[in-house]
Length: 153
Image 1 (cartoon, rainbow, N blue to C red):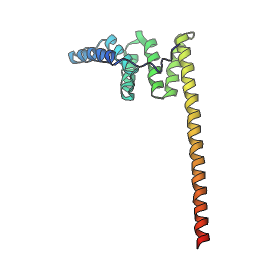
Image 2 (cartoon, helix red, strand yellow; image 1 turned 180 degrees about the vertical axis):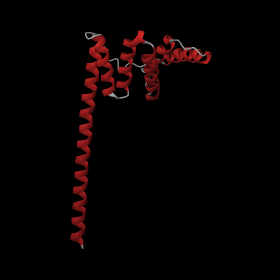
Image 3 (cartoon, helix red, strand yellow; image 1 turned 30 degrees about the vertical axis):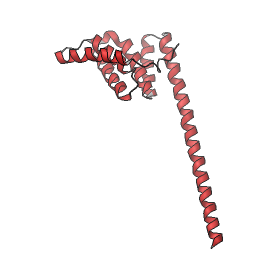
């Protein structure tokens, strides 16, 4: 299965669904379908600001339109994972799995999120370790410099 967390919406699709959404918004009546399609594009954007906007639209749909809860939960999980809010993403995955425990697509998404958390945790640990080593080396160099300076006096 392709990693849905890496899937990026085409600019054409985003513009198409954004136009429909804003036309309906201007008319004062946005359909659930138009809001979902626009949010679906936004959470698949490469820009975190778009993703957050999509998450807000999906949350609004989740709270106001019970018929699409499965889809909203799925894309809320994707959106949050894409902005590295992994705990929130897993919260939505778990909520989805309460409705449909054997959904293979959501189980695969859960594995992908966990892999990313693990990978980024390891990267974070490596960065911290590098920083620590760097500080030690700089401190050691500074001590040597001061020792050399003291000998010259």
